[in-house]
Length: 249
Image (cartoon, rainbow, N blue to C red; front, side):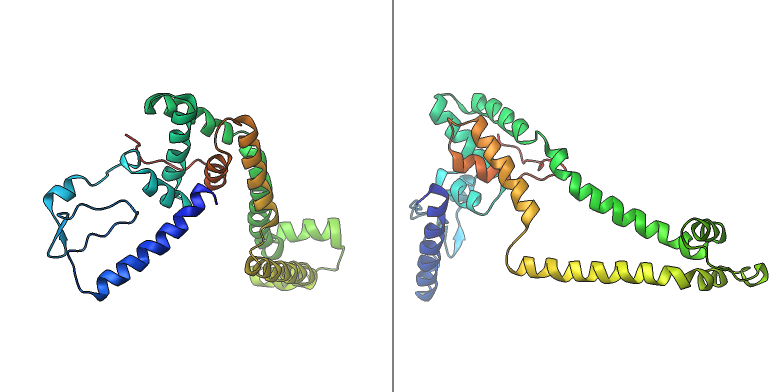
């Protein structure tokens, strides 16, 4: 069992302990999100003591290994970063600040080619946005309607006195725009339904493919470090822009 997957067992065990403590109505029973023992004087009347509050970790760098693994299993970017940084410290036998410098190189490597992977998403957005904007003048603007009719339709237009208003123009152009817009709308409706079924199956073909490709590339560039830590960090990295990490120290 991998290190990240062991955190699921820890969470299950912790929940069981918390339920037992609640059943006994003993609010001074120390509770922890990890299997690390909590000092017996950490809580008083169901509330944390000042001494225990002072030990609250305020950065991911100050958290225990167990806490980091649990948050990494939850795909928290800062926790995935910490897993890699601590693995670098062990593998290269260096301190935290030096390991963070290497991590920045890893993060930069993971961003390589990101715009290429994002190109299909940009293309889809651009086509949808442009089509939506152009559909308005193609239906309601007389000059655009006449141009489109001359180039692609060659239908007989009503006399000019019947094209003085925008809605009159739309009525004239609708005879050929209705099949086009209707077919596009039906096509998109079918694609949306198909996409919803893929989501029910947990399938995202292109998104999962590009994410796995990026993760495999990152692992191949840094084979000396833990592959699962690298993959976990790579797959949570956003396509458009990197996640804005919380301070580590």
